[in-house]
Each structure stands twice: as structure tokens, then as C-alpha cells.
Amino acid sequence: MDLVFEKGDTIVIVEMTNSDKEADYIKNYQYLYRTESRRFIVGEHYTKKKTILILFNRFRNSHSKNLLDAHFTFNDPINHLLIEDIESYEIYLPNYRKSCYDKYNEIERRLVLFNIESFAEMEFITKDSFDLKIIQELRNLSMDEVFLTDYEKERVQEKLVNSAYQEGVEQGIEQGIENRQLEIARALYEKGIAQEIIFECTGTRVEDIIN
Image (cartoon, rainbow, N blue to C red; front, top):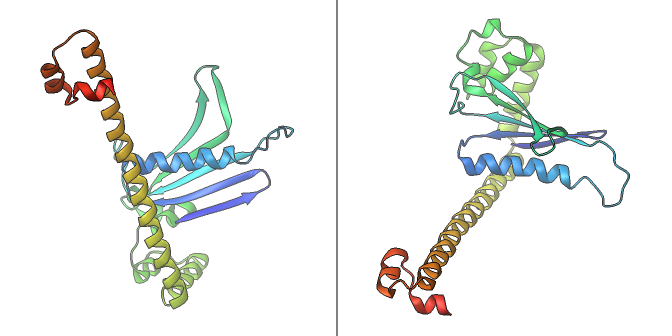
């Protein structure tokens, strides 16, 4: 899920995330930064434009397994200033199902529904008329062939994008390692270290350094 809401000078990005991989985490926050930066036009009179990221995580926080949610603000460590233009919220959905449903407030009860995988169970745990209306709409969408076709196309596209992104990350890491090995080999060569030792330590041939 990737929803973007805009009202006045505020944009809210809503993401449903299934992966706790660092690469996916970084990607979500890069999207936040890019969205905010693209909103400013060079030479315009400054107006405060806020962008908020809300992550509904379908996994538990790796550092605090019982954490329900977290609110993050950002700071400029050099100038010791609070950056008020961006902020984020992370909600760890699995932990909302661990406690008693009846003790939750209205928002928390709806967060529990994100964990449910069947319409029957959704209807069993909520009697709220607004919730039931949403559940019925979801039922209708689940039987809508046009929606399902578009949804499947979106999933395929997302997989292709994620695959390309991951491949780019891996290629970047490999290139960085190769560059570092070349730098080390060049430094050893300049110090007069034997070619055989340079190759044994770095896998780099002297002719590659000279060229």
C-alpha cells in the first residue's frame, strides 16, 4: 500500500510494509526526503511545507519487541536545530493483537483489524458500523475483477522495481569493494611490495594498477 494525502501545505505518506530489511527501511525514508525536497521551487519565497511518513509495519521492532508505535522528529546535528519540515510515525501492527481488544480506544481497535486475514474474523471482533461498512467495501473489492487485475499488475511492477533496486545496491557494494581493493593494491605497489604479495592480499594484478 502506498497512499499520499495532501491538505494545504502538508503531505502525508502512508505505507504498509512487510519487510524489516534495512534496504527497504532506507528506501521508505528516502521517499520521505525526496517528496519534501521536490516541493520547493528555486527562488521562491519560503513557506513551511511539511511531509509526514506513516509506516504500518507488519513485523515487530528488532530492538524493542513490545513496542506499539514510535514518533520520530529530525535534528540538524551540526547546528543543533529541530527540523520541523519532516517527521514520521512507525506502527508495529503485530503488537496490537497481543492485548485485549475491548481495552483499546477507537483508533487502536482499527489497528487490530490490519492484522486480520479474513472478513469473517473482522466482523466478529468489531460491531462498529463504520468499521463494518469498510469491511463490506473490502469484500466488494475482493470480488471486483478489474480491481484485482490492476492490483496484480501493481504487485508485479513493485517486485520488478524492488528487484532492480536490490540489484543496484548489490552492484554498488561490489564496485565499492573493488575500488577499495584497488586503492590498497596501489598503495602497496608504491611502497615497493612484491607483486606476488599484492596479488595474494588484494587479488589485484600490478598491470591493473598501472593501467
